[in-house]
Length: 328
Picture 1: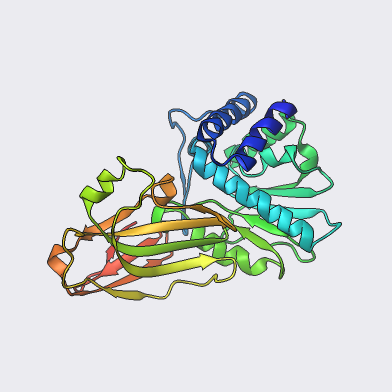
Picture 2 (picture 1 turned 45 degrees about the vertical axis):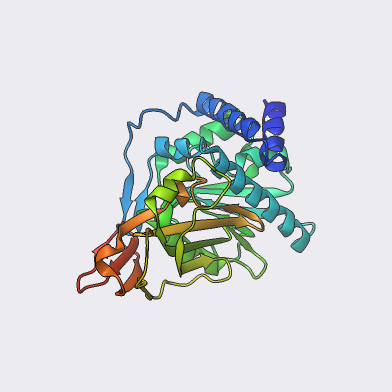
């Protein structure tokens, strides 16, 4: 089992151009994880948990995330590279990693047990869903990886505080949808990032949301030439949050141009930098699919104000007449 996971992990980490190998690898991981936990990515029969800061997805939904193979590979490479950086910044130190929203598989850490030893990394696995924690405990017991886990935390990552005297060198949270809607990624980052030490790191390193005018026809045509980026009218970044710029959103006002041609659909586009050069761009994953706001024909030349709201349904609101409209 350990040799199989090691081989899969090597492909995910060091063969970014081998899409077929990565696809096969994540499905192999899923089969291993599902067999040992009893949690399988299939029909969703369990329920999400709704919090004041957004939705925490169900255990089965969290299992599904593993199978988005490019998303899993890019995040895993980001975590790996962050650990390599931290080993340089904290030599001869067992690195402590807090995984907020670990789900049933602790997907972004478990494969790395085939690369780093117990003496190198310690896991603090946190989830608000007790079914996910229970599944992850089964997995680690089955794979004989218990020695990596410093503690299991059934807690809300938006309010969790690292105990005094403890240091988390790396924090991970992948609790988001496109344009940062519905799930509590922003609230989690606002709570956890300030608790990092000076050289501590957070995955993802940075998330950027921009407002752009799209042509639906050109967006559809991109499937014929997938390596090209469709022409768009970029109206600017409206929010960037990350390790080094972690702050609440300040309202941003953009203007719809007087001439928009065929670029009639105002949408929010998301780019995720997991670490360094590891990025997820538009369409590469469900997390980066464009989020349509409205057709711009009726608001040519008007000002549009966008504000990110943290609530039980987090997301951007826009107003270009008098009334705000929530788009989560």
